[in-house]
Length: 442
Image (cartoon, rainbow, N blue to C red):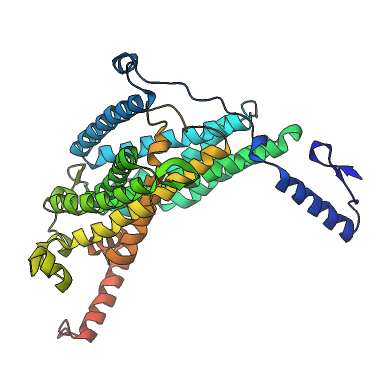
């Protein structure tokens, strides 16, 4: 008999199918018996609350002290967010990138602490190298997609864009080979744990933050309404739960209550509907973000689409008696805002529950102590990443149609003979449709 983990004897040998099956069953049973208490302890985060706030709130109970700290820091973050919106699209992209890097750092650091992997050869460097590789790939795809005219004018960039995917793959393969070469016999399992941890973290942070930027290019309103809805739901659910919460919602988050969940839902839907009304009136928020290669600036100027043009709608008969209105004027986007707000308040919180389960699995209270009263950046953006994916899927499924401007940019990159071939094919098609008259010359 062989000795299993923890000295548990495993009957059977490694020879023959029967012995192998028994060995596997015993190992699986042993793993099932392991509890979360087997997870190594992680040092608790320190209290990063500024001393001036500690002194000002020293006479309050812990519950109300946390309330004031969270409230003050929330207002400060919202004010900073509005300032960045004012500074424009490019600053918002830098904000998304900064948040992505910080979230990646917080999750990777937990992995280092949990698995005591500080001494693994090259692994800290490899983790950041893989982050650079994945960002190079995604941001390169964005440049090729949205800045085709700019790239066409610079010969050195044409090479990078033309072979972008090959270069990205070569960079990743370099990191992969470095990982294999760094394997040490006594650390095999630990190294593969961290290799998987790194890739899952990349999937959560980089891929979904890239979708945030994709949504931003569709128009700032597709960036602001979803993010604001999640923030509104987080704040209102906390307020309703703080003052009226009595019924626990989910065991993963003992402080979450049904009262907070329901109050947050209705508040978020109303907020999203009203907020969308104000944003839809301004080109700055509704026009797709495009790069003007002549001025080297991002521009948001366009003729607003039908989504952002006021229309008259008939009120359902059941609501006519309550509201006293037969028709109502509103922007079509406001109807979409209801869908976005509903997701933010009903499904979005499950991103937070998932994060709570993750933290409980590794016996930590917060991802970090970056923001006093709130925890780490990841604690505040756990729902935002799930929301960003939904918005991207929603746009591609229900909103986005063929984009003539984007197609034209791609045509301009082609060689003259290829452009002429496209022109002849398009002309022939339009003549067959009867849209163009056939040329007298044939």
